[in-house]
Amino acid sequence: MSGPGPSPAELETILTVGSRVPDHGKLAPWRFIVFEGDARARAGEIIANVFARKNPQAPVADIEIEKRRLMDAPLVIAVVSFTRPHPKVPDWEQQLSAGASAMNIVAAAAALGYGANWLTGWFAYDRDVLDGLGLKPDEKIAGFIHIGTRSKPNEDRPRPALSDIVTRF
Amino acid sequence: MSGPGPSPAELETILTVGSRVPDHGKLAPWRFIVFEGDARARAGEIIANVFARKNPQAPVADIEIEKRRLMDAPLVIAVVSFTRPHPKVPDWEQQLSAGASAMNIVAAAAALGYGANWLTGWFAYDRDVLDGLGLKPDEKIAGFIHIGTRSKPNEDRPRPALSDIVTRF
Image 1 (spheres, rainbow over the protein chains, first blue to last red):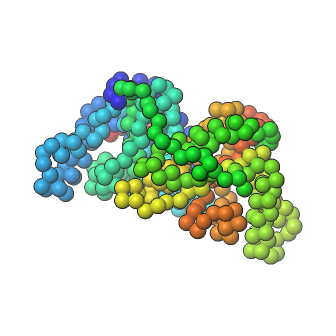
Image 2: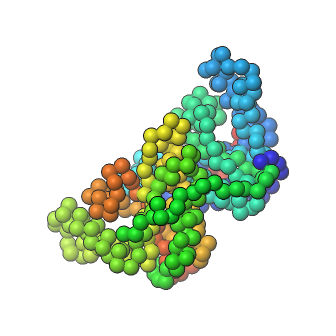
Image 3: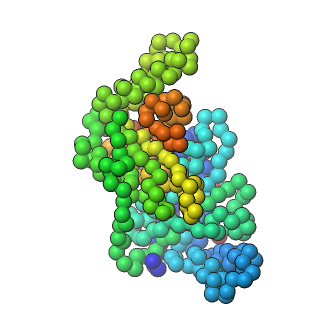
């Protein structure tokens, strides 16, 4: 999945759809970080630096891979999740809202004709990387959504049979 | 939002879309319970019985409200979330996958022309109700999605401005 990526107007549409999700109490318990152009490489430097520091024996080739973590697509949107104590809205619902937001970003990108891939990786959970990317201590990554032009048709993978996952009450 | 609800073929489409979500490791950490017809009232009896037992002073009118918790729409789909320990897939990602699934069910119903409302309520968190609905001890409700024909046009509610929730790295 490489370029071209969404236009600025399309990006705005994708982000808008990402913000139109079930959200009990209108808390908006999520935010988005956009990585385009050089920002992807700058983020990769942060990831690679943390990796090199924590893996001092790592070969250069492995560090190079880390530098390119956000380089596969022209656009990466990080969905950041956080929760706020609320008397009527459990953390659980606030977290699910972030999952809904990431899903909507994938769907919006697909509806506009782009490929979209919701990914994580070790660096999505490494506190030093998250600090470097500007996440506050109480913020988590729900996912990095990589968006670009598909280089080949999308093939679906095996999915569970409905008979295995659906019951009638 | 009342009847008519989705046809059997449309319901199958909605459930299929609900199962096509990002799901690291192909764990399918969710399942769906369908409530249609009398099943909605039977579930309401379970909810109301637990409510009455835990609120012995409750007036009859309040108990009647509990009986009708799943009666507002002709179809309710409960999205059930559970996690399994996995060396590469944190519980967090399995939970977000359930949020994505609920979001896709809402989107699929809307795409077919129905109204869909992702709701919870006290009974979504009450262990005795969950037992009565057949949830295992390690299963949680991600949401009850009520689906029917809209009685009036859908008005959007206030949403956060993108400038408040989007940053560029």
